[in-house]
Length: 79
Image (cartoon, rainbow, N blue to C red):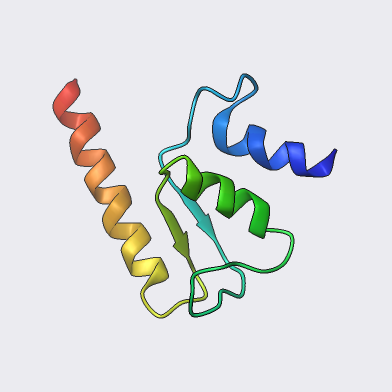
């Protein structure tokens, strides 16, 4: 039941409205497999091609900030 919450957070109540990115902080092994309670949500996001950024990796936060800036530029051009 609790794992279903992860899916709704990433894809909305109907599982069809994906978020633009997932920013998380959790241990991740050399193969990119996340451990802990965050693992299912991150795995699902990656399966759905949602960009994921791990704050606990050396470039995770910087990469996330770059991604958000790109999203803002793209959304600004649409208006």
